[in-house]
Image 1 (cartoon, rainbow, N blue to C red):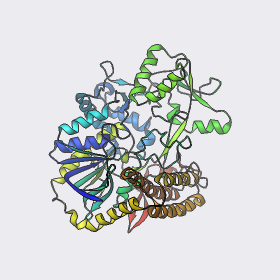
Image 2: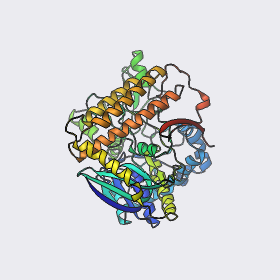
Image 3: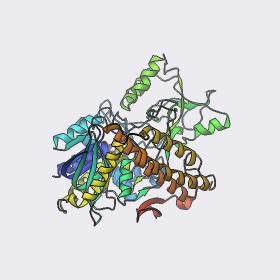
Image 4: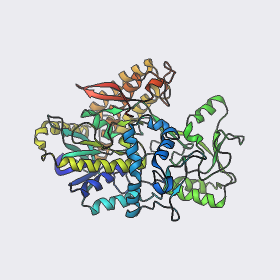
Length: 550
């Protein structure tokens, strides 16, 4: 395989919201920046198809920040903030207004009909914090802003490993082209990880349709896996999450639907709304996503999103935002089937069991390893979070690179050669397993041994099985071309993460959210304000509990 070298001050791994925001800010501060994206920054990542909600604080709308903060901390987002340092969380919302003004000036419509519009994801009578914005083309806008500032964008290159010197400082990264047999060695003073969420450890809700997901198939937790391998702590990996939406048609936008969740006989299943309300939506879907399973098990299901009686004006309002959320395929399907949403009840269900935990960072984006930063869904999943902390990581990385010398990756030559040989071996094997087979095996094991119900016996058995599967994959995966090689590397990253999810789930001896331990059925309140870390020490995973900083 050919080797190509590229040099920069700041390497942004992943060209999603966080990666592009980091690149824009670092370049503004004088750093030489490269964005490496295995897809194309114009449409890559979780925000590639669009979005219609931006969590934020706007002084002219919300008034006093401390009151706004109390509403968040003790209200709708209370559970989220339990797992977040207060300094970190406050920094997020204190800086969202500056970010959304930048987006508006760059050409992303942040106002609706000339004003800031807040709707969805809120309880009736409570202060709303989700700004409706037209995010369908946010990625082309951010890509243009990065290019105008001199950022070099390298599309179709997957960064799969990080390089560090003997002192533990980041000095580079290794990538592979997804179109030709080529290894790219990035010599860089710092790396910002922004590779997105991790939604492919578990099987899809529809058997055999692995791409029927809310996330694009390229989001395989690469940043988490690379960060772990160089010694960075990961947090709360076992606290998986699920989303809700039209059953069998997995698309996000649960708060974009203007309707009421009802049972088959037209009775609302939640206490919050009794008729469609575009301002709030139905928060039942967010308070208890498990309600769909509860109704099924008790014989009361299914549950429907009922839009009966919605006005023509509110229907147009909903359709506009659904398009911006990236749901035209859903609308096209309903139109083809002749479904009139003003008279319809769409069956809803849960889907996409995802790894909600990520890389442990502070509000500056620092991971604890010199030269390594992380932001976006690699840390926490939501658009305004990615934008705010991508900007912060870019700013702090640009300051850091002014204090260090140009790295010398020649000292990492043995590691580079070993990784290159590993890639060539996968490409040169004539017999073996395709990445699809390995992924199917992994997903089945995750579902059976670390799925909806977990126990010491299941988890310990799963750890053994995952170890054998990793060894088999490393010695038998084959790739017929460069694109298949990328998919093999994604599966290997998922396998590294799967082992950490098992170990973390084994160590968390309680039931919390979707982490259901049949042998520890109580939710332990003493763990509510603690973060569960897993880190590689002397080549082995070690877990630790730390207090959230208040």
